[in-house]
Image (cartoon, rainbow, N blue to C red; front, side, top):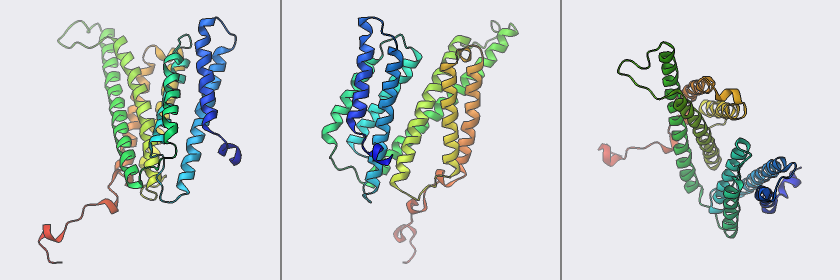
Length: 295
């Protein structure tokens, strides 16, 4: 099994994406039985083999000792291309009647071609890698947190407006709120944005932790609750997009309100653990010059 996974090359996922793109382009030639299933299958094969390729590459980098993990232009280009391919799959599942592959899959292949000449470049140092992935982790988690909060606020406004409409108070008084349809769309958008941002943030945190082993344990409370929040958001987004009744009424609102509860748990777990504190080896120290004390 290990030798099989180690034998996965760039050709595997490039070929899968290329076939998926050609299948999507073939819409212009007429109907083809099973084309949708084949497109999804080849895209999943490309995502799987590309993810395995990156993991095997990271394991190989780790075996080199002081080499940084997934911290070079080649790795980053492949990660971005993987993200675009994942976006294509999500959009295709959401709207299988559209030709989104014609616009999303060519950039995926272009990014891989752009990365190929840089495959033998030396990665950045571990210090540089930690700093870069820390910025990605922090920014993505910030966006994800803000999106969950915005979804909570939109859900609160939705329930308030629904109550006012039921009580026939929406037209009176000085308070005017957006329509229920607009607030429902906002809830849905916040759910998607927070899921994507949290996923990127978790990826950044994992790679950052791998580049500085021992600073934050994998069983740390902040890590565990962040994973729980992400998998809840992922499940909520999947239910909202794949289960049509969830798109109507208050169901998506309740999903975003529950997401806020998981966010509170994640923040609590982060602030009460080592995850949310400055490591001891990075704590600022006072010099004898600044304190005036003799050495």
